[in-house]
Length: 225
Ligand SMILES: O=C(O)CCC(=O)C(=O)O
Image (cartoon, rainbow, N blue to C red; front, side, top):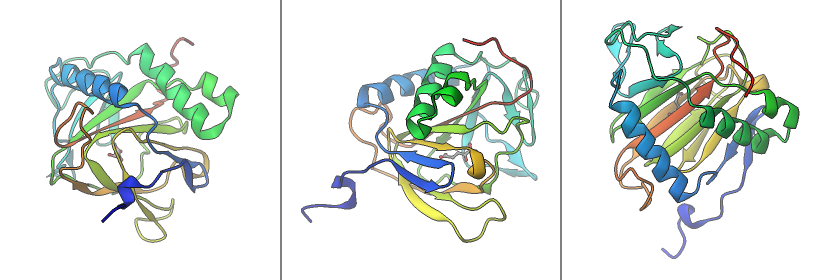
């Protein structure tokens, strides 16, 4: 076939009110740089682990920055892993989150004050998935900013009422950003499947998928940057 969907230009798109998909937001070099950061984060002090949700181990492994997430709470120390304090949330990631939020919304005032203080960094192997859920362990309802690196996934973005229709399935590819806030902040969402072999050359992750979601916990007020 001369053209597949992957060859077609992909433009920013509002998936639902408050939910913006920004395809190809990261350059290939930026993806590779973030993949290198991921390998450093994964080296410790707290290793990636599969969280247990209602006694079932998730198929993704997660390493956190700023605050450690466990179902259904945040703490500074990884009390359900090895008790060590998680790495600080990097200043550059605050700036990155602000730039993405501005590109998603055009709202300079909101973007300038956006101060994420935690990131959940998930690694998906070829068979990993994430069930439909809401991100509601944060006190703050500031937007969630997500970045994808590696294999494409089918990301399902639903409604705020339940896990059922209406929802949209979108192909989140390496370098894509996705923001959900406002009316969509509590939308159910999940990862239906990973598409092995789709990671682009040079993205820094030959197999699997990294997803970074930045969030504002609302647990402690940080210093403005
Ligand atoms: O991997 C993704 O794109 C979504 C991750 C997610 O839903 C989460 O970390 O809560």
